[in-house]
Structures are given as structure tokens and as C-alpha cells.
Length: 344
Image (cartoon, rainbow, N blue to C red; front, side, top):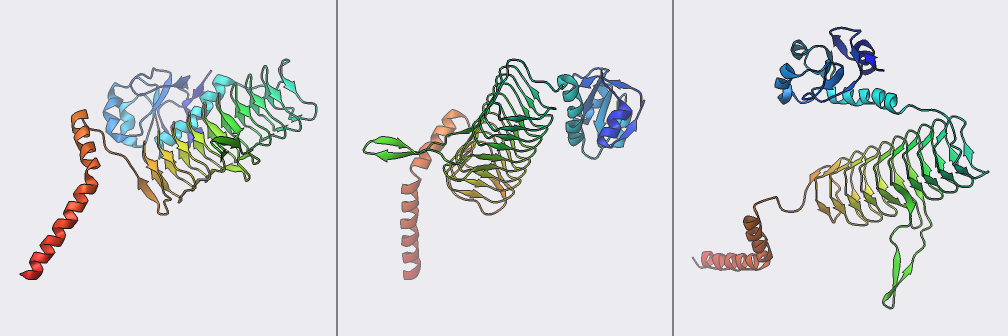
């Protein structure tokens, strides 16, 4: 199975240079694509690879580059077009059918749309609602009073706690857990009293959540994930966090409780956010940064020291430990210089 170049060009709204009936069976990189595969060139600095590329067709921005490949589809944004084409081949790979597996356990009060697909060993709790064309993978657990919007997909072994609301066209990957208790404990004479979490999680439309990512329920109010948010694997989102529409969060990020992230923000891998802070819209936090205060101005922000050889890094770290003494010495010297200038 596959698609002709004319079908793909129509799907991405591109201009075709070559054979409209040329068959494409899958996608491939510029370096390794074969004669029946489609590739893409998004960065012009790699244009030299086109002369050696064996792909059946390439998504390009520059029409002049079309002469260097077997076939080409010219578009304004090849990377975006590539993302649009992946939809075709992902659906072709996975397929879809409306059925409920015989081993699924569904509470009698739950409402499962007739066009949904429920896999083996799935459990769905009381009064939950599963929308049309949803796909629930094997072993996934859906609690009570959960709502899952139409065309959403849960991979295998996803856990959704009670009361969680998930929008339309969402994707939750294996091992993701939505609605577990936030980390709330009150100190009591050297021990800890559990604070029961009474809120839930609200997730908008077109959200994707990566494997083994956790989104905790709110302590009182809800944790909120806005429309179009993309979250990578192994991310921790604590209770009462609010993430604005179309923000993206890379792997291993940790966001402490009651933080608010604006719209169209990006947080790169391994970054950490302290609790009770706010990021304005269009804030971009680079990898491994620690954000301990609110940011009210859009832009890119970083923290930490740059990579260096170990001996040089140790010298820099030693100087940083002496920086307070150095600042005091500089202040003392400034006063002495000002005194000498006044006397002069």
C-alpha cells in the first residue's frame, strides 16, 4: 500500500515536479531513502546531499533543487509538509476498527461510542464517557467519571484517574499517568500528614503526552493543560500547574506545583521550574536550566555554566565559590580609589 506523488502533493498543497503516478510506499531520510520512499530537505545547508540521494521524491523549498532529484514536491515549509505526510503513513501502518475486545471490563454505567475501539484487558469505570473513534490500547485503565473526547488515542498501559477530562484528538503514550495525587504533605512533629488532593486534571484538544509522563491532579483547583500542548517523555507536572495553549515541553522536565506557563512557550530537556512562578507567553527556556523566579518578558532564558574540560570547569567553580569575597575586595578598592581622587 502507498500513495502516488499526485496524492501526496495534493495533501500538502505542494507543486509537483516529476511523475504524478510515481508510487511512494514509505518515508526515509535523505541519506538512506530508497526508490519508493519520500524524503525532505528542510535545512538548505544539506542541499549538497540531494545529488547522492536515492529517494523516489523529496519535499523541497527551492524549485531549483528539483533538478537534482528523481521527483520533487515544492512547498513553503518542507518540515511542516513532512509532518503532514507522516499522518498518512501512520494511519496506513496502524489501521483502525471499531470493536470492544472480549477481555475489556466496562462498567454498565459507562458510555462507549459505537465507533470506539477498546483493546484487550482495558477497564473503564462508572459513568465515564468515551467519544467516537477513540482507541484505547491494551491494559489501559480509565477511572470513574472520566471524559475522553472523540478521535483521541490511548496507547497500551495508560492510566487515567477519576474525574479527569481529556479533549478531542489527544494522544497519550504508554505509561503516562494522568490524575495521580500531587505531592502534598503537612509537617506534624517530625512526621508528615497527607493532604488529600481534591482537584482533577483538565486537558484540552490536540494535546500529546509522552511515555511515562505524569500529570498530577490539583490540590483543590484543577491542573490544566491547554489546547495544542505537546509534552515529551518522562516529564513531571505537579498539582495545580497551568500550561497555556500550544506550549511544548521536552523530556525530563520537572514543573513544581502551582506554576503557570503561558501560551507558545518552549521548555527544553532537563529544565526545572520552581513552584508558584509564572512564565509569560512566548518564553523559551533552554536545556538544563533552573527557573526559580517568574519571567514576565518574552524571550529566551538560560541558567547554569557552559560545558568545558573538567580541569577548566573545576577552576571556574572554585572562582565562583570565592565570588563574594572578590566582590567585597572590589568594593573596598573602589572606596580607596574614590578617596584618593577626592584628595587629589
